[in-house]
Amino acid sequence: GVDGLLVVGPRNRHLGYPSSSAQHLLDEIFRIREATKELSPRSVWKIPNEHGPLEISDGIICFVSSGRGGGQLKTCHFHEMLAPADQNYNLFQPYPTEKRYVNTMRDIDAGVTDIVFSTGSDLVVLLERTTAPNTDRVDHRLHFRAISTGRPHPEATLPHIEYIYPLSPAFSSGTWLLQLYGDMVALLLVQNGGGVTVWNWKSGEVIVPCQSAVASIFLSQNQLLLIANTKGDPLSSNDQEKMNIVVYSISERCITHRIRLPVSTLRHPFLFTYPRQTLTQISPAQIAGAFAPDPSLDIFALQFWPAVADAVHPCVVVFSTQGLLEACEAALVDREQYPVDVDWNTWGPKGSRWFPPNCLHAPSERGIHGARMVTTTRSDAFDVFDWIDDWRPNRDEIFNYPVVLDFNPRPILRGATDCDFPLCRNTVVRDMWSWSIPEDEKTVSIESGLPFRAFVSKAECFHHSGAHLHSTAVVFSKDTSDDIYSFLQHPNLW
Image 1: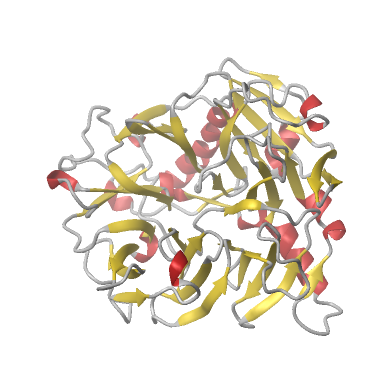
Image 2: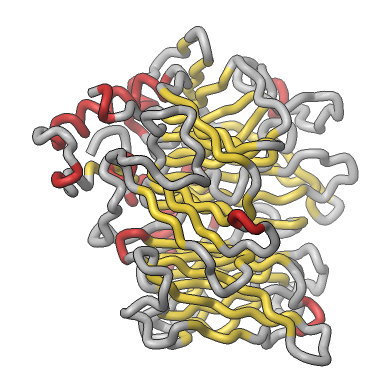
């Protein structure tokens, strides 16, 4: 592995790539390093913004469109995140004979509201919203399809699962999101009164019955991180903005840890990570899918609004996943019963980085990949750090400058000094910093020191609704297109 990327190729030699593809892929990592360091894409291509849900995984971007006939979203397009040899290629037309992975599922017999997929398992999970007769309640159906055929997946015991939200039907019309990790698929309702349920998609078995949660992510193959309102918890206030952050163990079938943060008032919290697959699930994307993040360096992020009336941008907190897992393991040493408390001071200041509200724009759901995160910021965010002491946002500030934050120790060590390139500035931050946030009519001082390297673009990105990240590309969703800025070179040019 190099720069936090593991080379999981070569494969699919029959597609006609160079026979020495292992060396080519290793060379490509170093070229990716240089292109990322300068935020200088080696190719740019666009997807017309005529689609609904979008997902990125395995080096492949998948989007759902209404196809030629318009109406419901019933066509799934899968494209390797590698620029077409023909830059004028129309993604909605039959695909030319070219050496990159592509697939299209047409005429799906369900209106799709969300998707997750694993090309290594030939699986796409489609979420369909259904309405029960004579009721306002909104129900859902999860379809398990083979990408290669569009038919029910042969390894799935059930072709689909009917789901009725059990906690509060009054809330069932909120935002629903799918999450996938190996053989597990989760369905999350994102709002107060929300919850998450997890199934094994192969057996159809419920492995995590619906847990109250407004946000959730997979920490590992055995652990879910949940943010839940404290209402009903006898140890906590019933304040609607007071939140518990807990770890649910799939093997123990219960909450095993309670994570203590410096603050508990979290308005509109959300958790961010990326779709993680096991290394045995090999992507068919020969080039873009050949690079997998090193899981020991993974990060996840928490976004929330502070308890102040003039907050325009949220707080963003980045955590080391491994740091939290190790803290959870250490907390079990003297366990008498579940859940155990994980003391913030034992791991948090060194295992996290708290960005005040006037530093970063809210990241998108797919703004994290491995140890990196992409979002937008102000032009001088990491030139001076006076905003740490006085972080209250100025409503006139513009957060249009793309930034990639890299928490991988290797590029941090290489970037011992700040660098200025034609297209971006590099800044390394190792110091602990401290800033204060209101909490329960008092002020709480928060220290954090997880090192990172910031790559801040000098060019503004206007009219975007989200930035998405992969090991080899950054995707900006704009008004008329999704623009893919790739750090890969098409193999025809090798």
